[in-house]
Image (cartoon, rainbow, N blue to C red; front, side, top):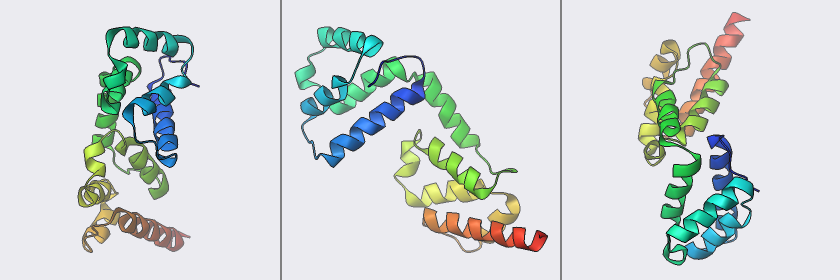
Length: 164
């Protein structure tokens, strides 16, 4: 169920879940996708959707248009910009690699263009690592994100073993 509300992460999670279900059910038709996505709307979301259907010809609406309208209402652009800035500013600092990678993964979904290019994604991750670890990883020039993450975890484990 999606009731609406002020928490943009709840809205984004709802849309992600719906898209995942529709993909697994192999639903291809945009109109059917929108019907299924709005079927579980209640309270504020149901009222909002009634207003949308009065203003737009829903039968011809694309999923991209639906997402745009949905985000306009429940995931304001200022919040998306804020999350993007957090991603742009993300560095490991004193975080464990696992925590840094979790934050990186969470925030990267708000910067879809970085996800489309494996090399750019890997480079952004590596250059956010602590400088000592970064220098060891950049010397090997990883192009695959998971390989860079794995190497960073290995280096962190080695450092912990040395310190123990």
